[in-house]
Image (cartoon, rainbow, N blue to C red; front, side, top):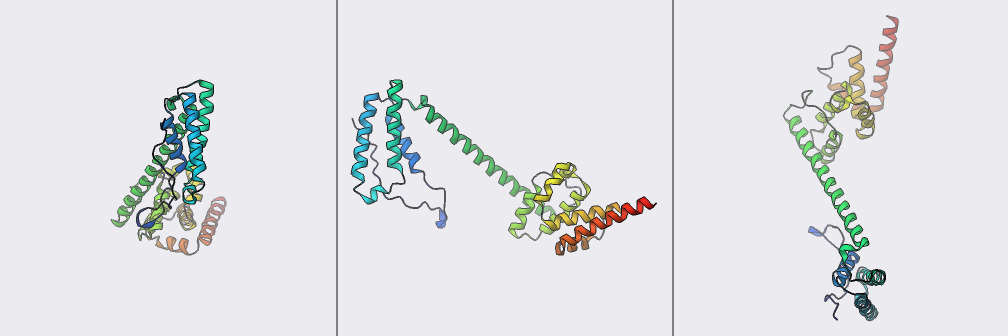
Length: 257
């Protein structure tokens, strides 16, 4: 009985992507296990024992070859899988069916879960990129104002623009600060406002705090407030302190009145 699939171990090269960039490494152990399962399908217990003996013989001969020994763990994975299948068939009586093998099915289920998680991650990244492009376009056209509602994920879109070095990031910062100060859009949720402390950089949070403090003094929320952004960018801690001072002064004035 010939159980070989024609594979011979060889030195495993480093997996490289386009232009020499690293890519996902090849899982040679997984390839080995899959190969064994394909060959073992339909085998009786005695046939599986014979296949294990043949695999052990090949492994013994390959140890003499330094290049063959560097196989990325495939040969050892094959031996381990043959031994597991032999033990399984000693209990079930065979023939071997990967579709009824609980270990195989759990591995496949876990692989599907990983693939789904990866797909969702890619989708989320694409949504952030699309939103970043949308906000940048609106900012570039001078249309990123209060008519545009903030939504979950805008902080990540803003961070992406900053990473790109996009010159429109400043306009997005101003828009987000106004939304946070006014508690509008997704910032209407107190939990989201709390989370913003970890998602937005200090200058944006300081700008929002000063916008909110100025609004509580009765100052117009619109108009020439460019100085708020410059102050927050240069001294976010001092800007936040100024906002707190204004709030305190307003409270004292209101109490006196």
